[in-house]
Each structure stands twice: as structure tokens, then as C-alpha cells.
Length: 433
Image 1 (cartoon, rainbow, N blue to C red):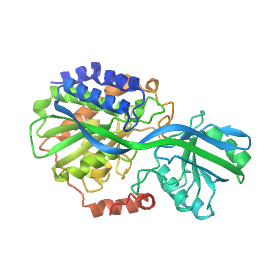
Image 2: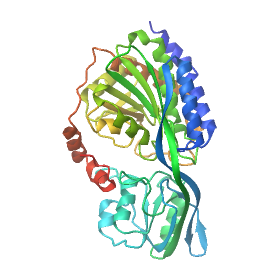
Image 3: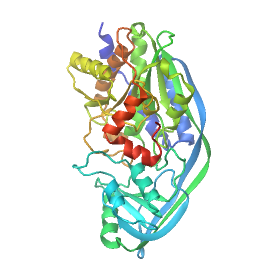
């Protein structure tokens, strides 16, 4: 009866696919590498036993990285462009705004200046302030350029898109610098003239979502999802090769348990997540959301041994995850908060019950969005343990006896207001209500 547990713990299907993805190299949205990764994922889902494995293409704004520089005094400081930065340059006084909290922007006239902010927030602050919110506050204040300083040591400049819902390309040049470079810039050049230059090719492009199914044909379905794209500066092992490899492993395990599925389970590996949730926005816009019973979105798994599942206030999702954790005597942390920063969000915001499944790694992103997001940071034991838990959770979601109530969008909006997320979403143009 429980042979599937041993088979999952000894399977190499998912881990082998993870190695395939990281060995492709650049999987930036719209790139040839992303297309190869999507095709490899389609084939891996078919090999795992899922039916109708296919690609669905859609148009996106293409962005290809060129050289970037910060000229300070008579030296160039090492930096990388933030995706969706315009191809532009700017000169102005450097202003180190520390954490770049809303009050930091409110307290300073930044018109024409080059703003530098950290990638974290202080422990005492009541909410996380996302990179895109800090960028949009800089734009709104009239800054001429944006410098995003990593708060994690190790000479690692951070990446991350600066586009918002109001447009695919940002308004001012944006770069990331390491903690060490940022500290030196702040110490030596705060209040002095510096220059920022970003070279980027802006072009038309396409991305694609990967689809496949298991279980009976039904009007209702559970989605098991991830995103296949990654930032071009690293292997994208944690973000999000591991999530897509997990989808493949779950497909293999669920194919062995297909007779236990009461409704359709659809596997989706989204394209172009890192540049504005483009693949999931595309699917949400063309799909009857009432057909979706629940979404199990894997983005950030395997980076730590304990899973953390954001449940977005859906109590039934929290309860069934805790039942699975108890059944296997293996911890899974459930977090009832809203999390508007991955591919579940285009569905959750309109009331679709969804998990964002990731690892409990504490408050820091860690190696993610840096050159160090590489396979050596991940552990195959952790991958297999989490595959067992998530397989059981997926079977539970696809059981007719499990029910979960949809949320009214007004409830989601109220939760975002109560949790402090609404303020940033309104700044970036991502507030949909």
C-alpha cells in the first residue's frame, strides 16, 4: 500500500530533471534557454506518465542584459542591471536611503538623485518592503537611477525585475550591487556625483507554459505548478529549478497513484515568472477560475529541510497540510498570510484557494537572485522527503471528500490591507481591486 513512499525516496526522475535544467545555463524569460527548459520539462512530464504534455506559447516583452557600470570618482564599482531596467544612463548625487522604507522616501527630496537602498528591512518594521516597491517609490520621487544593495555578505550583487503592472520596462536605470560595494559607495560617495549606465536590449519575445494532466477528466481540477524560467546570472537551482523538478517528481509519483485521484490534476510549469508573473497572468486571463479547486505552487522548495506553506487565509488548506505533516511525523510550517509574489497570485487575488510552497529559510532570501543560486546548495535527501509530503498533499487535495471554500475578492483585499501588503501594491500598480 505504501510502496510509493519507497519508490519516491529512491526515484531519480525529479533530481535528474533538476540537473538538466541547471545545465542548460541561461533560462531568462524569452530566451532560447527558457524554451529548451520548457521543452525538456514537457518531455519529462510525459516520461513520468502524465498525458497531453504540451507547450502553450504567449508574447512577452523581451529584455537581454548588456554591460552596466557605476562610475564613482575615478573608479568603476561592480554592478549588474536589474531586469526590465531601461537601456539608459544617469548622473546625480548618490543618496543612501538605508533600508528604503516608505518613511525614508517621505523624509528626503530625491529629485534628480541616484537612490541606493538595501534589500532587507529592519526587524522592527511591520512588513517586508519588496524591491519593486522601493524602485517605484524612487521613480515617484523623481530619482534619476536606482541602486539595490544586497544585505547578505559575500560579494554577491542581487538581481530581480523592476517592472510593475503599469509597464514592462522601468522608467529609470536600475542596478544591483553587493553588500560590500554598497557599503563602500555609501561611505565614500554619499552626497557626491556618481553615474549609472545600463546597457540592455529591449525586444519582442515569446515565452511558454508547460501543461500536462493526470486523473479523470473532470470539470474541477487541482493545479500543481512551478516556474521554469530563472535569472540569467546563475543556474537557477533554488529559484526555481527545484520547484519545476518537484512538479516532475510529483507527476511520476501521482501516475503510480492515479486511481486515488477523484478529479483532474493539471501540472503547469509557468514561463516568465521572474519578469512579472507573465505565464500565470496569461493562464488566469484565459481560464475559468471557478474550475480550479486548489493550486499547489512550488517556488522555493528544497532550499531548507522544512517546508513552509503560505495558505492565504484558507483555513482548510492549512488543516489538510497539518494532517499530512502529522501522518508522516514530519514538520511542515503553515503560514496563513497573503503572499503576492509568485505564480499562485493571479488566481488567489480572485479567491482561488492556493498554497505557495517554499522552504523555511528564515527572513533572508539567501543565495536566491544571485550568482550563487547553484545546484551545490541543494540536497537530494531534502528533495525526496519533500516530494513524499507534497505527493500526499496533492492526493488529499484531489480527494472528493476534501472541500475548500473560495474567498470573495473583497476578503483578499481586506487581508492585504490588514497585513500591510496593500500599500506597496498600490505604489507598484499591482493593486487589482
